[in-house]
Amino acid sequence: MVNKLKEYFPLIREREELLAEIKGKRELYAVYEEWSSAQREEFLDFCTGVRGVKILYDSFFKEVMNPEYAPERLEEFLCAVLKRKVKILRVLPNDSTRISDEGSLLITDIVVELEDGALANVEIQKIGYGFPGERSACYSADMLLRQYRRVRSRQGDDFSYRDIKNVYLIVIYENSPKEFKEFPEVYHHHARQVFDSGLQINLLQEFVMIPLDIFSAQMHNKPIETPLEAWLTFLGEDRPEKVVELITAYPEFQGMYATLYEMCRNTERVMRMFSEELRIMDRNTVRYMMEEQQKEIDTCREEIDTCRKEIARQKEQLELKDKEWSEKVSEKDAEMKRKEEELRASREELARLRQALADMGGDCK
Image 1 (cartoon, rainbow, N blue to C red):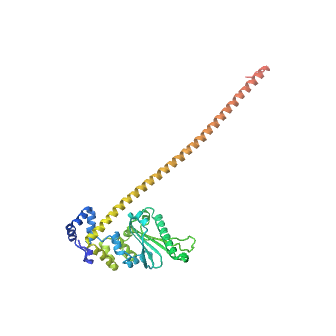
Image 2: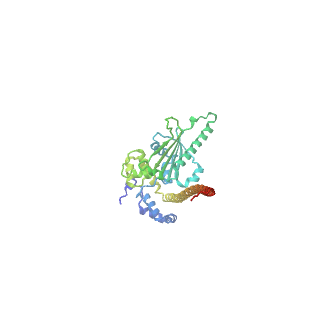
Image 3: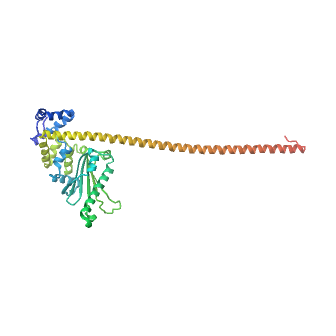
């Protein structure tokens, strides 16, 4: 099979060479043996150019997109996603509490301050969280509050709300939540808060959500035509033919791939990185399964509660009908007794009249 990527990246090693190095070092071979056969093949494939490198692996993404020493790359990505000119001023620390709580499901989480003071958070999820809207709203609000506190502390008495700038939350899903499957032709969702009256007030929070699985399906037989399509292809595609198409149409990506293949020549380092990615994915899968199981339990509980309420409602209706029937029976019984009493009184009156007529010498039959 022709190795298409090796034609563009001569530094890519042959499979036999890489395997010989791994087997020649006891510690490397021990790690290699711990992997499943599928994991071994995946590692060998991207290191030898049979497949493209998985850019969404946290280590690889940060190697080529780290804003601390390659800000222009993240700037170009943000320009394509936000459709506005972007200049990164500095990198900000993440919310450590949130990272410890949710880190197992995050691939990458980068927060930067832009030149105009706006904040942009780029978050990549391998498996989409449940309740993506509610979660995104809460985290965006948290970022906005953190900015408010920081600016107010810095400005002191000179603080003005005009100093608070936009907050952009950009979430990229490798495997998107079910809500996105309802829009199989859309892979770029951009939201900002607006009034239905047309009132123009900047509420500062904007959201961009990108499902890469839907993008890949849309681009299967479509050429790369825009910078956004180029960036999403870079992030989501590992098919050699798409990598070649990308670097042919947008040569600036060739340098990023070259950086990654240079990394792959350091076998010990890249194996360590790959093992960490596998560990994170295993933890992600367990966490995801736990969340899905919990959702099933919650759904069952809701269904049971609904059934209980329905049973209680029907019981209440039956009790009400039973009461109504009891009242009707009581009424009929009282009416029957009244009729019987009237009949008895009529009979007594008839007997009295007959007796009176007999006393008068009449004949009443």
